[in-house]
Image (cartoon, rainbow, N blue to C red; front, top):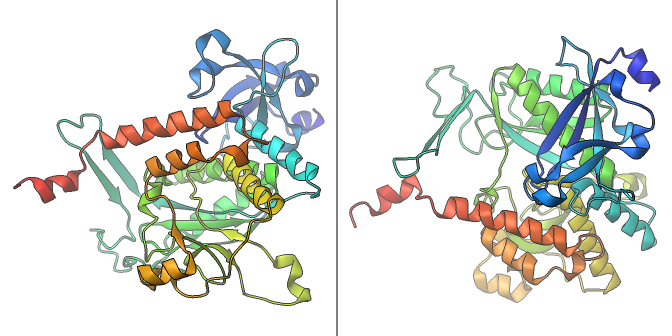
Length: 408
């Protein structure tokens, strides 16, 4: 409460995460916020208006702010504003954790780790995203036609004639002037570090052209790391808006990146330093001196995921394997992308789901390992949402189909 006075905060932004991983918020005057609100919460949420939360007859939910997430928002200049990330509670006298609250599920996952004899788990997400100069999308009238148009001064299809475009798949660590976004990323890191207290290791341009960026967050405990990912997305979007650009991260097209020969993994295997495997043990250093840098890199998630759900599911799968002593198998240190199908069969290398439908069907048939953390209610709601997302795309013809089949 003292910080609100010291920072002369006029408004408080109460933020929470929905089932799909999107940040939501409601704003209140700081002089209406009281210290007991950290314990009792605030009756500020209609759960029936948030996709996948509640029906209308059970919609009164409570937002309980976490004081450790306090941060000032520097791009709101007119009225000084701070944010607090909230947990969601059910209404009534008991005010229990809402079973579909992503942050509440992540908190439960951290508790489950401790119950199984581990002090904590640490997470260091590498979140990648695109920054475009302009993005135009037309899908409102699918029966008439659909289109999208990406404008980026560094893309090979750019018509600006700047002379320093990045060719397809040649965007990894280019120097200026090819890398057009260094100043933007510097500002993002400055806000992440100085205003939100999120430590960043490095930032750079990634492999793709048209403004693919990466800012690496230093590892933290499970809930804190998930908070940081949500704050990261919030910050890079708002600073991109300040620069008059549009930012895009993968959503229903997550599985379009899971094809052989690109950066994302397709095959289920583990390896040392092999980026074609889904689990990689980085091999930059060896020896006791570098023990603190040792980590496991799980390469399947993309930035569109809900980090609270993703980290919780990963830790649930890992603990399930440890408790059941499931065999890990031998490391696969060959380029799996170049293997023949016969060679993959010999090594027992299986393939990831190739579509969202395959993924949610697999989740529905193999969910028992999630039960200590996720209730069936939350899992059913996730699957229901993913079915809707899949159908939204499935019922719409792809423009390329016309070039393929118009003359059939």
